[in-house]
Image (cartoon, rainbow, N blue to C red):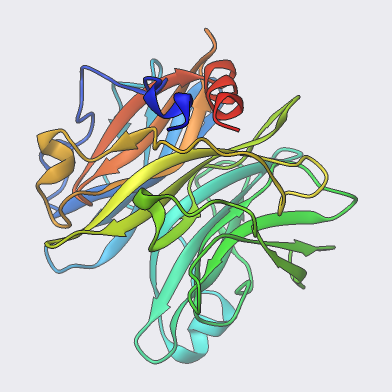
Length: 310
């Protein structure tokens, strides 16, 4: 046994969990989950995925001074249709990830249409009040797009999860955020027992001196459900398709009641992490596709945990 598999996870649940439930929302809804997260104007900002009782998804903004207690906007964001959607109809949009570039915030998310399936979409904003839709980033079937926070070798870079064959994270590059190529799987991410079904990017990658720190999700099937876990991996700074270190143990599994019971049982799923002023890394995740939760660590502790399992 790898000794690092016996190390305790550095990611700890917050005692206030769950921090946002459907009952906390300022309007009736079925679920609140899978939020993108970023620090904006000195506050933690979440773009929540909210499902109504009609099972329609919207994005709703929430902000917090302390990263735990959130003020939630009473109405969803105003996100116009892009050119594709104007032709074929509105897509089901969900699971934001937010990346800042030079004062502009790019929000990657999934877009699903009954005719075509799931593809990658993106919008941009400078104030989180007005959103400009951009062209779709890929054909179906694809999801879990996460834009790196800086260019790599002069190109924009993203993680994604094409849904064909071995369902795993891939890396793609673009000169302009419109045309994407140089596709490459994250080919040496080990298949652990807790991630032998599929894996996909979670948070926006965090740059450290030892590599890009990525908190991702993996799944494995049991006799009664497909269980989701969170893992951590260090990717090469110049070639993020190359794994530097991947610990053999997950950092979070669905164990608490608010993670086990809900719309989709046994799920922990993250779309964003924010480093707080005191150095704490707040990892925002959904429990059972129903409610928002918080776990905490530090970047340094998570990097060391990855390296210990290398």
